[in-house]
Length: 368
Image (tube, rainbow, N blue to C red):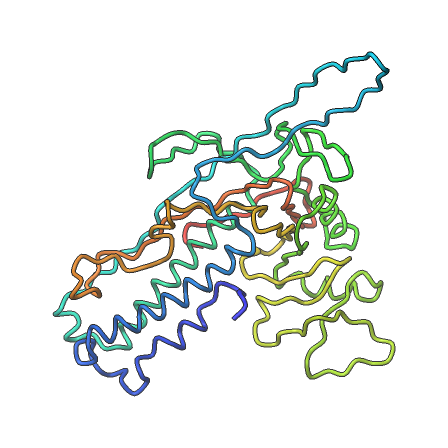
């Protein structure tokens, strides 16, 4: 399945233990057999989660990197015996990548498995997977929508050093890379903007905020379901070209985008067409009143950094157990990871509210 979501439809289809066995206890079914089911589900779950990482994030084990925000040097006219003056440039911005541990207690005893039906066990596992999805979504949303720099994050899982975690371009005065055409940007340049309604100009300005820096990957507009009708209404002017439903035959004068069809089975996570050449994608993690433009970048030039421990140790959700013979009698399920802005110019966010006078970050509740 294409990553749509972080939804659990694929995994829930697997963790059924044969359907007719739902009334059996875990011991009757067999602990090893149940564990094999869980391992299969976790593999699918982690593969789905990894698709979002690959789309937006560059995986790294480093705790920081340098974002190339150097001002332009300039050529100097010279003659036969001239020697140009040396030009010094700024070194850019040190970008920190946080690492945190997300865990949930998962402990069962033999007595519990003597009485716990497979259905109850399945529901517990599904609840744990959903908790992981919510935590991942919260971490992603904080990285994308928060305009606040955290310059003294304590790297408490490694060596307790303080690292600077920056938001995307937020007018903080740090140097901004010049565009591919040589255009420069002031330190007050920000990618956190606002509008009072979803208009073609507002969407186009959001796109411009990203593409004026020069792009290295596909440009996408991520929108919430609540904005879909407003985007569809832009078809009349020719700004938006939607994908066609597979069961619809277009008229002779109709204008639709090619290369895809409209998914009718997942309205909260689907591509719906193109606006000014940018793919418009409905995503469940985008909150109401917000729209995000992203340059997905090249494989080593992504907008976000996804930090893991060396060799990706425990980067995926998994059961951490002590007894090899009885792996289901686990202590916890956990993963070690962090998500933070990396290429600060590759994401721009638009806040839309009729009374808006400035950008306002969404309230992201714990567990969202």
